[in-house]
Length: 176
Image (cartoon, rainbow, N blue to C red):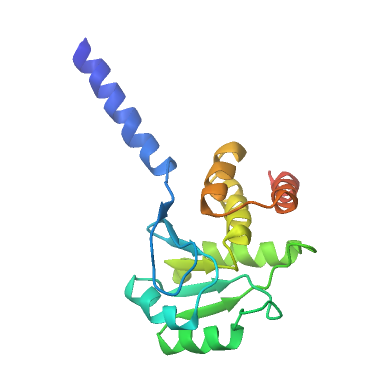
């Protein structure tokens, strides 16, 4: 009987492993607040254009930048040029936390779901917006419970209550 219990426990652990992705914080040259979420996504804050070649070496094939071009230090054009020079696809989806746009979220969800963009590196200024967008993705596309997605989003960098409220409301209005 104890073998059956041990086997059932082992199977239960194996089944839940993919559901418990853990944010792994690492140091990466030219990237503020870098973390690897799983094999298909990495997240970060401010990313120097010089870091693009390092991202390519890490295996990423695309970069999603959520920063506004008007943000200090955003360097959107330089980031795009450096990404393309490194062989990375560059997707700029400016997301304004003060005036969040659902259409940007829709485009983000389509971009991260597109397997040709994976593995993808997603960044903003601090990883706050990345966390909010990733929370939405986890619930709507990966079918995670909201509380679990929020915990992961906070580990990535979500720390703005207004963005958390926007993300939660977006999720609720788009759940089937």
